[in-house]
Length: 333
Ligand code: BDP
Image (cartoon, rainbow, N blue to C red; front, side, top):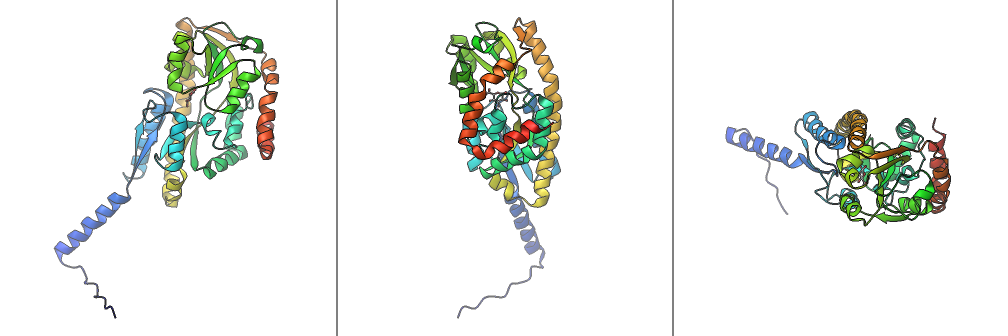
């Protein structure tokens, strides 16, 4: 028979000190050191806001949760980083919902061209039931959305000519983010879609590998794309939100109090991001126009919207169960 020794009470000073040391080591081992991915450069609204998120996490958790941010896409392309956060190679990412779409069909709903009428409509949809369904779809795929960031409206730009009607896109080679919906969108306008990593677009525009691309004012400006593609046409065909996302297993492993703290920090950073975004959208627009960009409005977008029917048909054909979500968003006032 095995006999256990009785536990000896720890009363002597050296023993107490050792116990305290062990306890502090255990806390250090529990202290989470997260790594975060962001594609944007220093000074960009998302970069500033993600740094704020890191600062708030540290502050609110009393140093128990720290986040080291890696900006400028130094940890790889966005599709790769999304995969890393899903499988736990990284804990945190600021992702555009565009490249999340191929992973989570619910999230892809925001990539249907013209689904949102304007930024206000997008905010109301995301803050309501539609946002809950999108989050649930993402969580099932390993990504918990802690907060939503703004990313404005994406419009076409190119090195050839102003785009006024769908016929102007016809025959153009246009870079898109990795998502079949965007390739379908360009094909529906008669153009040639070219899915490509964000970091490769400048050189591709410069050397003529592609004629154009599409993005919001701040990204058009911060990447220098305006220097090599000087026509910006206000199609505003996509209003895609972004998330501060965390690996689902890491999030599920937190106590309720820590979950609340992490969400609060992310939401506070989102308030800052949205303020900075609104300002940056203005200053970026002014900067590129001053630099000589030829900008045209497209007041009547009906022809572009009608041309998108095949994109909706394909999405709903592949995901018939998501029709109510599309209708929920369209019906959101
Ligand atoms: C920017 C998004 C970024 C995308 C980029 C792109 O903020 O996440 O990677 O567009 O076009 O607006 O790839």
